[in-house]
Each structure stands twice: as C-alpha cells, then as structure tokens.
Amino acid sequence: MSRITTPAFCQSFVTSHPIRAEGDTGAMRSGGVAAGDSFIRREQAMENVWVRQHEVENIQKMRERLEAQRKQLDQFESHLEEMEKAAKVRQETAPSQ
Image 1 (cartoon, rainbow, N blue to C red):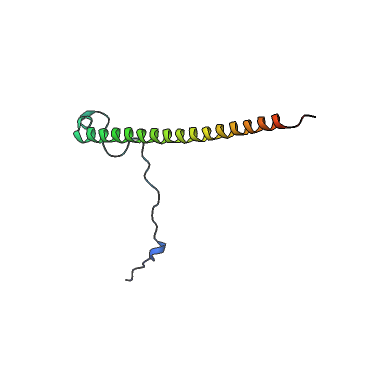
Image 2: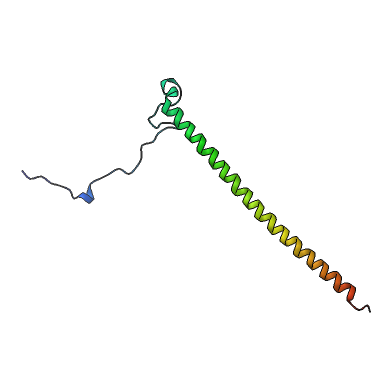
C-alpha cells in the first residue's frame, strides 16, 4: 500500500493568534497570594522608577526647548528694536516737503 503525501507548501497552517480577554497573560496579579509576591513588588517599584526618570527627562527636554524659544524671541525683539531705531532715524533725517 502506498502513502500519498502532500507537499509542504500545500499543508495548512494557522496564522491567527488566540483571543484573550484583558489581563489574560497567564500571571495572577489581582489579589490573593500573587499580590504579596516580592518579585511583583520589585517589578512594580522598577516600573515606578522608570516612569519617574522618563518624566524627569521629558521635563528637562521641555525646559531646554523653552530656553531655546526664549533666546529666539530675544533675538527677534532686539532685531525689531534695531529696525524701529533705524526707521525713527530715517524719519528724523528725511527732508520735509
């Protein structure tokens, strides 16, 4: 008796992922024994530290941007003052008709 084999490219395969509800990751975290686990507490503490550092970095970047904007505004203001002075000088020295 001979066996019929199908080529590898004809064999079916599944590409979909299993559907899970929110929080279904396999780990028990919501109360009970798992809530008091030292690993979970350490992981949460590390996440909190990372979030704080990320917030500090964002605040520092925003302060740097603000300082750059202030410098640019100061340059615009000084340029505007120079233009006003030049216009005033031209107006005073212009011959009146």
